[in-house]
Structures are given as C-alpha cells and as structure tokens.
Amino acid sequence: MSTSPEWVIAALEERKQASLFRQTVIMEGAQVPGIEIDKKDYIAFCSNDYLGLANHPKLIQAMHESAQTYGVGSGASHLVNGHNREHQNLEEELAQWLGYERVILFSTGYMANLGVLAAFAGKDNGVVQDKLNHASLIDGAQLAGAKMRRYLHSDLDSAEKVLTRFTQNQSKSSILATDGIFSMDGDMAPLAGLASLCKENAALLMVDDAHGLACCGDTGKGSMELEGLTAEDVPLLIGTFGKAFGTSGAFVACSHDFADYLTQFSRPYIYTTAMSPAIVGATRASLAIIKSEEGLHLRQKLRANIAFFRRAVSELPITLCDSETAIQPILIGDSQLALDVSNRLKQKGIWCTAIRPPTVPKGSARLRITLSAQHDFEQISYLVNSLATALATRK
Ligand SMILES: *Cc1c(COP(=O)(O)O)cnc(C)c1O
Image: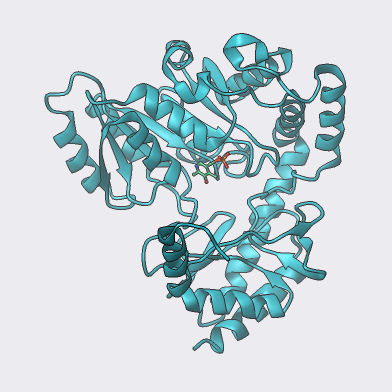
C-alpha cells in the first residue's frame, strides 16, 4: 500500500499518460559504443562521449596516479582548503590553451551556469537567452532573480530587439547567454554576430560550449575557433568535462577580474566541495590528448563518421537537422511515436534514448543520435539501415 501523497501519484500518472515518464536503465560496464543493458548487447548512439575518452587507458592511468598523490576526495570547498595543486594546474593549462587570463573550476556544467548567472545577473540587469538554450542557463537566470527574455533560435534580429529593449535604463551590463553548439539540435549559434551585438550594446556574451570544446575546430577549441573569436569577444566561456573530455566537472574561462568576482559572489562555486582531485588528474590527461596529434586524429575520425552518416541518410526519406556536429537528431514530433521508434531500434540492437519534452519543446520529441570517434562505418551503416525500417513502420 502506497503512503505517498496523492499529488505525487497524480503527477506521475499524468507523465505516464502523456508518454513522458522517465526512468533510468542500468548499463553494465563502461561508456563505449558496444554496451550491455538487461543482458542484451547494443550499439549505443546517444552518449556525449564524442571522442571516446571516457574509457581511455591514459585517463584511467592518470586517475590512479592522481589518487595516489592527492587522494580521492578534495575534502573541502575551493576557498577553504579543497583547491590543491592538481586543480591549479588544470585551471592554468585550460586558461593558456584557450587564451584566457583565468579559468575557474566548477563541479558540474549545470553549476557553472548557475554560478555565473547568479553572480553576474540580478535585479539590476537582465539575461537574454536563445530560445533553445540548455536548461541550466534558464535555471541560472531564475536563481539570479534576474529578468529573462528569450529570442528566437539563432535569430540575430530577434536577439537585437530583445537586447536593446533590455539595455535601456539599466545600471549593470545585460548578459546574453547562448549554447555554442545547441545540445538537442547540434547546430551552431551565430557567435560572431552575437559578439558584435553584445559589443554595440555593452552586454556580456556568455557562451556555453559544452558540445563544441574538444570536438569542433582543428585544434578542438570549439565553436569560438570555428567563428574566429577570442576572449575579448566572449568574456565568459563555459566548458564541461562530462561530454567530449570524458570525465566530469566544468569550468568558466574569463578575465582576471571576472574570476576574482566569481570567487567572491558565485554561491554555486563557494558553497560546494571542489572536484575530486583524481578526476581533475584524469581531466588533465584528457586535455593533453585533446591538444595532441591523437586528439587531432580523433576529431578527424569523428568528422568522417558525421559525414558518412549524413551521406547515408541523405539517400533515404529521412530529414536531418542542419547540424555538422556529432549531434544528429531525427525529429519525430509525437512523444509516443519517438518511444516506439526508439523501441524498434532497441529490437535491432541499437540503443538511442528518445528525447521528449520538457527537455525539448512540445511536439518536437526526437531521436538524438550522437556519433563518436569510436564508431566505425559498419556500425553507422547498420544504424542507418535500422533507422530506415524503424521509421518506415511507424504508426
Ligand atoms: C550537459 C550540458 C550542461 C551541463 O553540464 P554537466 O557537467 O553535465 O552538468 C550544460 N550546458 C550544456 C549546453 C550541456 O549540454
């Protein structure tokens, strides 16, 4: 007999009725293309481990070594005594690599976005955001208690209208926040245009490049590299380690003053335990790979896989999104239909979780296919053939 309050049961039931109920599945083993769930083998096409670093021997080794020297837990927040040599080294390496004065580590990307907006936005200024920004940017503006307006997806005219209206009679600079690569669509923000817009309006441009860093650009510096932008154009850059870096945690790259400012005023930075030094060690190994010849090869392999996938799909009656990145969504629309297609793929040994509202806008449920440098052409061909049948038999 359930003793849960009725409103909890009702909310769960409502989600189930709308085909929006979510639950975890248990994956045996590491995040690799060949996974095992419920005693069955699948090829996975939905992880964010785009370069295949999550299970890389060099990262595993580095994590061991770092744990030997620094232990597993940092034991305190950065400002008490949880910030050790390993954290400092990673911050300096990232700052130098990306051409910023400073980098500050956060425990997750979600918290980095909350942390920046909570510190830089408030009742005296507004936050302007792309309609398709990641949930953590939206939540950050709410935590800051800031006014928030959203502009049409990647639409510079709409962004300008919203921003200029905001900028009048405001004592602090507005923040314009955008994903670099949009997490559910895989397309790129018009960063160069947004950077000019922000300069004209004395607004601060904040770019969350969770899906661009390590993957995009010849040297892996992400969407800023693709658009030829520097630290001057993007005063607040957010990167995460849970995607292509293959570990977990996040960072903000910014100026010296901004880093000092975050250190004073960013509650999600101040009131939380610093990242595990062992994970920081693994992340340093990851960065070393990303910067090296091996990283270049992984990016080339990923790019070849993306091109192969798009070419194969173009011969089928399937519409792809306008994405050149590892994120290649297939829009389905209806949530139940997206679940059905995902289940049909499962029967064929392909794991691709259906993404439904509220993660994506209503009526835009999809299969968010992601490719990795670790997939091979044979696996991708198999995916495309299976997609063709799974989509043809829908309804
Ligand atoms: C995944 C993601 C985050 C959150 O990062 P975590 O480290 O997983 O908390 C933030 N922004 C974007 C665009 C993301 O895709």
